[in-house]
Image 1 (cartoon, helix red, strand yellow):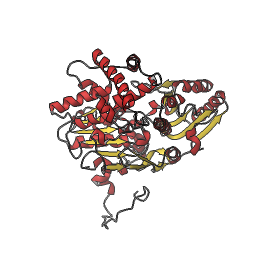
Image 2: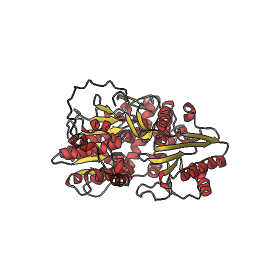
Image 3: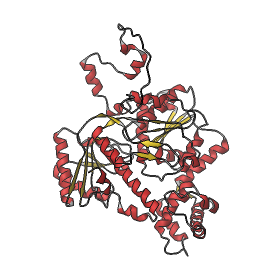
Image 4: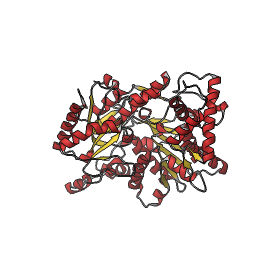
Length: 512
């Protein structure tokens, strides 16, 4: 295993084995293997729900689960290496070891937190005493339910923020667009929780281009200060505000609600969320564990974890075995991204991994027009059906819902297959092909995946690039669009199809 993953094997001592002993009776073997005594038991195991196989822990991952880090730690790995499985098992391991105290297993998404909760039920038993000490909830929901001792805080929606920005910008130069102001609010002001001009003047502008001159920055601050004043008057909050409010309450009370916190998909948390995570558990060797992959960041801008009070330098574990995605799909997906990715103040992450599965190469098929693309998709769906792939084992994704509908509806009509859209609070309908945007694909996996409408105006989405006004911001926006494609491709276990009409995405240039 060490050779296969690029490591230098350690010299092992010679052990004298008892040739008459059954190796599967050893306690360590029993926790890793299930031995079938006859064909009937094998058949019963294969009939187990797929959810039980999803929490299977590969031996190469056990070190990450049980390792004792001296401080906050990060577990990383490319898609398919089982970071979520490791996060679940680490939370279960910490809960079993701790005689008392609560453990939080959290993430950025409600959909992912529900899947993690189901996994913990399988690992610990839904009604066991240990399971009752593990809270599984996405971070914003936890903060929203605990930030106020009275009523839940009202959240300002996007339309409200946009309206307040338009109202507060009166007298500002017309060259400063509302889109620029909203991007500055999302990436700087609300992202970091800026509350004064001094903070705004000093904050690093990662992803926001060249520095803004002092006089202009002061005029911009008056706009954002006015927006904050109106929010306070209306008693409205952003989720970042809610995280800060709960963190301040915890620090004032001096009572940490959890003994350990495990965070999955940590790359999609912002600085205010990370500061809250740091406050949820007391400092300790295993109090904070983060699992994530910088290559799958699709919701947040990069930033310095040190500036948010989290230092994981020198305490990381890289997962290198991919047991979910075929080698062909993994190689294709990894070639989309740079060979090395580095966080702002983190360690470089190599994309290399070893896949245990083999399968067909991904299909890349372009067409002259939309009708041709729909025909390609229909032919692919018919082939899957002939090979016995169930409709609910198939997912079709696109950058936008509209682009997905334009391609999928004629293909499904031709094949007489029905579909269901991904909904956060609803399980997939049996017997129907699953549809969703690339953002909604995060954390899911299917036997076969098609990503349609991969033209150069859809990936990267031209509308998203147009909102980026600075060169650095355009680059980071394009990087995030590329990560979306990577996430979509790695949802496939066995088969992957990518289609487009017209000119193909620039992202496909390196792999076509």
